[in-house]
Amino acid sequence: MPREPRPSHFDPPSVGRQGSRPGSSCAAVLASLVLALGGCASAPPPAPPLPFEVPSAWFIAGAAEPGGTPSLAQWWLRFDDPLLARLVEQSLRANTSVQGAEAALRQARALRDVAAAALLPTLGSAASAQRGAAGGTTTGSIFRAGLDASWELDVFGANRSALNASEASARASAASLGSVQVSIAAEVALTYFTLRSAQARLQIANDNLAIQLETQEITQWRQQAGLVSALEVEQATASAEATRSQVPVLQTAIAQAGHALAVLTGQPPAALAATLEATRPLPQAADDLVLSLPAETLRQRPDVRAAEDQVAAAMARVAQADAALAPSFQIGGSIGLAALTLGTLTSGASVVGALLASVSMPVFDGGALRAQVRAQQAGLDQASSAYEATVLAALKDVQDALVALRGDRERLATLQRAAAAAGNAAEMARLRYSSGLIDFQTVLDTQRSQLVTQDSVAGASADLGADHVRLYKALGGGWQPDNPGADATANGPPRS
Image (cartoon, rainbow, N blue to C red):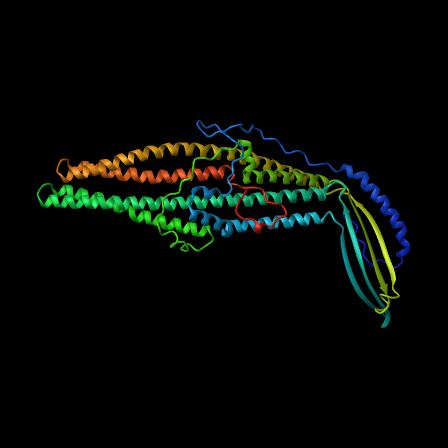
């Protein structure tokens, strides 16, 4: 049933100061009722446990032993590349996704303050002037001014549950901001490795092209001397042109990676062209990271904490929907001044006041309130399932990163040995061919092998650096919960 309207200072003057004493008794009785019913408000149920056990260690043979929580704050500094560090820190300030997440956090905190205000009394003020007439004769004027207040007593915890839900949503939004920051930092680093890898591969292609052009020139000389046929010349030309065809592809990849880095840092696509033009070696991280235990990793992951807070918010909404089935209590009052003339409003005016206590309880609503409870319970089930999925994905991310790191480390060592041997073979084959000791097909084979293995080394080096980045991200990326009272715009890069 609808609640009774709040009292206002426009109540009839017959309810004046003389009526305040019974109202005080009423307030005392109502306060006693509040204290008696306060114990009826139930606390939210405990968080549902996971349907599986978190492993006590990472199942990777040869992985580093867990040794407490590792320090991942500003992990990009571990690559010892000042330009990479500058790009990451700029992206954390200017990236549009980060700015959007910061705005969402400010919104969530503002909505939390709105929910907190529902627990406090409200106070309003109003003033009016009225002049009446009947049958062409003026009946007089009346002037009124006053204050009115009301307070909904949160006996069964509906408003408190709404505040709990808003606070949990604000915490989830803060964790989501951290998740966006971690993801953006990792994406900048991965794109940077793609750029440096393409530059390294372009240098390798140009170096091999120069060697193949020298071989082509030698072949042409030998043809002019009648030592070889036109077949060898055409083979040398085909090999050189095939290598040359890789150059524009790699140049395109370099330009596109530069565009992606510029956009990630909140700039137009071509803004970093001059900064990234110079070729630099691929950055590599030191292999001195000590892994944290799986349970500690989950606490360091912002996406896991956000999913956990979403479960808490859903639980609070269930409690809020349950409380809506119970009676609601409200007290209010008004005090004001009324006079026949404006000049006597503050001097000879009569003081009027009123006190109201009301209770309302739903009787029949077609099952809407109970359906709302079922809807919020279904929302809780969804949040719980999402939380479990996030935990499983977090554990998988770490396991995958460890497997990839181990495999790529072994692959890189093998490819480096192969590239060294291929380079030696190509040089010996070129010298022997110049002396006429071997046929040209051997030269082609060794040069192709040299190009392929050197290109593979550059790719494997980039993969190894990317594996470190993915591992840092999987371990939480150095995220720490922010101060709930801090403004989102003051949050810099994740720090320990």
